[in-house]
Image (cartoon, rainbow, N blue to C red; front, side):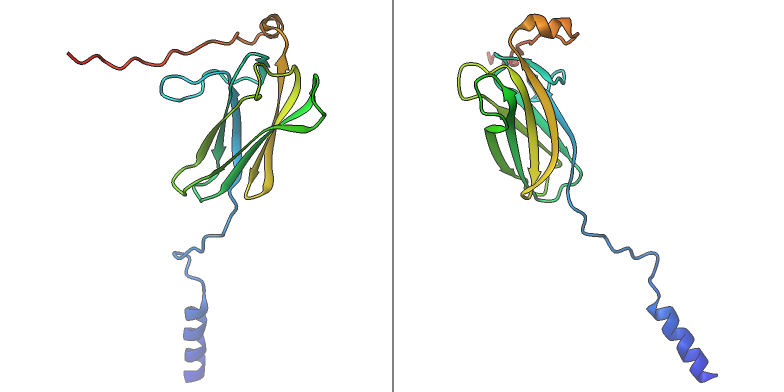
Length: 166
């Protein structure tokens, strides 16, 4: 009887307690990528789009991450097939390391010249050196094509003025 009682106690002590959960070491992922032409005075993206004009400089990119864990984030803007650019060439590359207190990152992308070359592009997001997600977008030569596709034209957002002290 003592042996059965001892085995029963050992079995109870060795069981996983359902109140104690072990958190799995899950990787951070990209939940969403949003592109926009402008940000408002508070730094929030204006209307999301994947169609831009050659003069939309910079293009704003915002990422929503799945966790607040510290992670190395890299954004590559790739010219998939753009006028005058080598196919699948990286046009912009930006790196950022989160500090464990944020679940989002914002980037800006500029072509390094006066205008973007018209064509198809892709934003590749890498987390800790691994490709996490991609989003394709288009640079149109003219504003007319964007308006015909039902997209709203680019708008410039004026920053809020600071109140004057008297």
